[in-house]
Image 1 (spheres, rainbow, N blue to C red):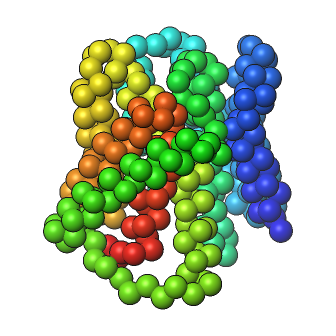
Image 2: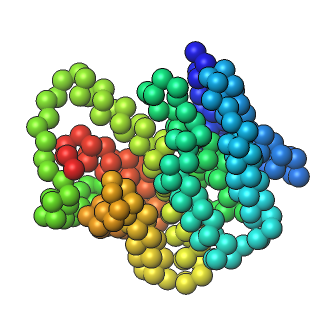
Length: 289
């Protein structure tokens, strides 16, 4: 009961920017946007930590500093490839670190509450890019169109033909026995939606929407932008499940090529989100690693 208000508040703020009308109203705030974003970054933490008795002034100040850095990043450093790369490095480094687990503590141990902080981090960083930097051609949102489903599914099928054999041959995955009962179906559906609206949404926005487009603009080459983004995307998976996880990084690099192609073909991160979510869901449902 102590966590629910904070979780509902963060979910509301996380979902709201998916609507164009909300983003337009936020953009119209002008100079008032920055303090509002900073306040919104710490509000869920206060709402949760105070009743739980886990509030720490040090963590509150850390959240404020991080929110200030992200919110003012593109106001101070107005653009350029270096600015985007370092911004993305900061986003990824904090997300992959144990920071949120240390800040959003559950005194009972389980369930972990760091999801509240991770959603906040995604939301604030996305809004900084959309509203302050002003990235275009992303088509940010939660609901894929019919075209997005078609493009995303097609690229998933192409990706599966390559990623599956590679992952199996290097021993990264092994087939699992699947019993298709109601629990399995509901679990697979839940996994897909979670992947689509959190993992795929954030990673496709930052890697394809921001980095791939920035590399395309700076290099003028689709091949260079696609290849470089896929390699960086793969490298971001090195720390996962024990550093250096070369098998995971290799599979993620190959998958990144198809995510990038889906983005280019669909002209929307929602297309690559579908591909990404389907790949991750198939991995979770049909394989062990």
